[in-house]
Image (cartoon, rainbow, N blue to C red; front, side, top):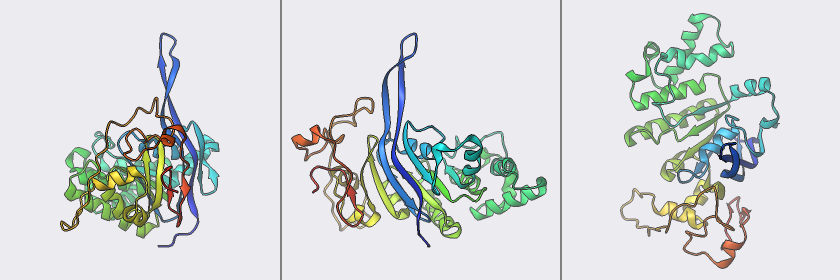
Amino acid sequence: MKKNGYLIKVENLKKYFPIRKGVFSRVSNYVRAVDGISFSIKKGETLGLVGESGCGKTTTGKCILRLIEPTEGKVIFKDKNVGDLSNEELHEMRRNMQIIFQDPYGSLNPRMTVRDIVGRSLSVYNLVQGEKQKEKRVGELLEVVGLKKEYMRRYPHEFSGGQRQRIGIARALALNPEFVVCDEPVSALDVSIQAQVINLLKELQEKFNLTYLFISHDLSVVRYISDKVAVMYLGKIVELANWDGIYSSPLHPYTQALLSATPIPDTRVRRERIILQGDVPSPINPPSGCRFHPRCPYAKPECSQSEPELKDVGRGHYVACHLVK
């Protein structure tokens, strides 16, 4: 697969959700869902974004697509700042930026046939002329994702979870995008179906030279599909590296704890489980210094006093930890 040049660059991205109280709905505080993250993705590459629920992964994906407006920071797509685009320019840009949603049950309109769900964007962007051409294109898309073209007459309730997610993938591919945000696309599926959908995503990436931001809380899934992995904790990226660097030599204590909980297929290999103490702090009032320090088994006084910088420790392996020099 050819990989040259960055398709997506995220620079100091922040998203704060205001908390309003009182009769006049005055802002009393903010939920710091995403709090200053930066990364880049090359064309044809997959970046896995990993972390616990509530760490800001999905918000990051939606900010990149401007489904929600970032509070601060830049998203550069093909050398254009997505935040500076007018509504018309953003509409045109969206042809190249699509999303596959987490819930295959809630993301498909139950009152629409598969033909209308997959083909709606084709009509919006005037990519087909007439119903016959639309049906032909929808049929091709369904076959690409492993479904029969005859299924276009059916409604979502007539399909299994895995089939519904394939319909969601076909919808995302309808406009021939270059970049796709995969927002936990297999977390709602049975384990036996997860591998099929992941294999399909890999095949489609090879076939259409797609670039993915793959959001997940499951490190074993991310390992199978990603070229690079970014680990998030409480709105911050704490480690970023190629997948082999993350899995063979994790440097941040949080990454080490996540990996220790990942099942190993080889029963002969034993891995010591790292049990984190306490709960994830609130993103409304995050801890001072390193946000992981209240749960870190190796924390030192400086960890609570100053925030560590995400720095390159060699071979493109970035980590934000005072203990890693």
